[in-house]
Amino acid sequence: MSVTNPVSTRTTPALDAERIRQDFPILQREVHGKPLVYLDNGASAQRPACVIDAEGDCYRQYYANIHRGVHMLSQESTRAFEAVRGKAAGLLNAASEREIVFTRGTTESINLVAQSHVRPMLQPGDEILITGMEHHSNIVPWQLICEYTGAKLVVVPFSDAGELSLEDVASRITSRTRFISVMQVSNALGTINPAREIVQLARRHGLTILLDGAQAAPHMPVDVQDLDCDFYVFSAHKLYGPTGVGVLYGKYDLLKAMPPWQGGGDMIRSVTFERTEFAEPPARFEAGTPNIGGVIGLGAAIDYFQALDPAAVLAHETDLLRYAEAQMADIPGLRIIGTAADKAGILSFVMEDAHPHDIGTILDADGIAIRAGHHCAQPVMQRYGVPATARASFAAYNTRAEVDALIASLHKVHDLFGR
Amino acid sequence: MTDLADLYQAVILDHNRAPRNFRRIEPPRSRALAHNPVCGDTVEIFLRVADGRVKDLAFLGDSCAVATASASLLTELLKGRSTDTVRTICRQFEAVLSGDAEAGILPESLQPMARVLHFPGRVQCARLAVQAVDQALHASRL
Image 1 (cartoon, each protein chain N blue to C red):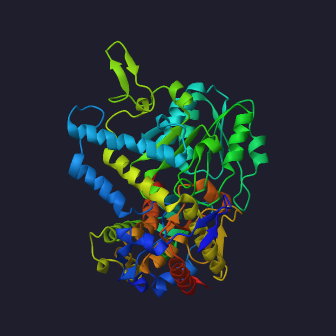
Image 2: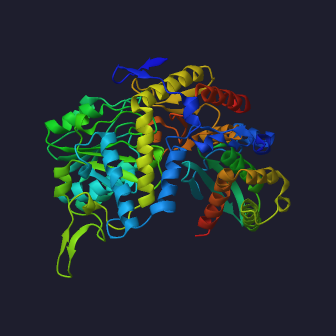
Image 3: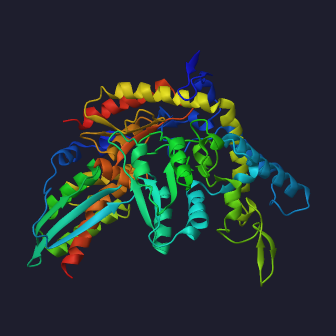
């Protein structure tokens, strides 16, 4: 069996979700006496045994601090840690592994770019451009540097369907715009934004741009050279990897021109009390002992995800999305929030008589894990006039049978709360 | 297994569907807003005190069934009572929701809310209203 991949239109082999499920130990468990149906992947995905083992093997077999020891364990740890830089570069098709900086996650990656690349170039009255659908982590770091510098945040609105128009983006780029930061896929709406076209707009105006790939990198092929973005960020834990680890991709020339963000060990060439010389990127941005086991776990997660084939993952999750949407249309009072033509496997919705929090509790009783809340995107909630939404978000291991369970449980919600 | 009927009892569903005292008091002598940062829910309490009594008590908010029912039951119970009694009941309700006291110490109408203790993720929903009443009462003395 094969399906047509909407991105490349080449034929992608269909995922065998039932086989993939065997790789994830947690999916065998029950919740409230029902098989776990995990549909909160937008918040964090689960880990396959190979990721758990990779991190465990590091601690069991060769763990030591990296970049400093002459002893065998330190060399083995360093080798395993540094190998992940190449894997991450491969995942994103970066030109060089020197362009990969390890961070604590998407949030830290964005803060790093804000403080180290953007803040030094800001004058009062300068502008940073973001969109109205951003996650708090792509709003607040910019507000912080605006506060320090007197720059201001300019927000591109989006349509009722949850789509950006390139005209709206273009019309908000002014002579004062200094930087653009946009999410590739919306965590609250599922919209796949025209990232490549927005980067081209930035290029045309000589601006640098960051793409927040937190909800994109785990679900589709990403090619930073094709996108031509200056910075690309994502978190390991949404890509079947450990928490507390993230990646910042940056074009090398830009990274090289950036001052360090945090000072400490591992990011220096030499230190005296008079003067410190900083290391070259990426080490310059990796002060202190990093999450060694976590990064090694990320390496295993990248291998796993690559082996699934990111294009096949996207096709699979898109199939689940369409399948779920079609059945949701039959549930009275249910409204999907975010109806963009181009969507990733994220389904945000509200129900007329049931609050998202209550939906979440009723689904939980059936073993179904979804997110209920504002998804760290309160401006998006305000845009739609809702305090919160319920959100089901898919991963490679989800199945149509799980969507059926979701739909059955939503009918229960309607029966309990519907007037 | 978690029994949903425990949380969504008829009385709670009823107060959610038709919340009592769901209005603004104009002009509000005192008001307070309780906010649950986890879900973004808010309960806003309006309160009017005169002669040591809570003469009027109302609420607004776009909240889940648990938060709405809790506010509805609480306003219905507390309206017209002395500020001392209101303070005592609020303290008792908070103690029960914290697991520090048995539900039996509560006035009967509030007792169904104690079932929320079986749903740890939802306790804060039940707590919003009582926190706001407490704050509004405090503000009324300033």
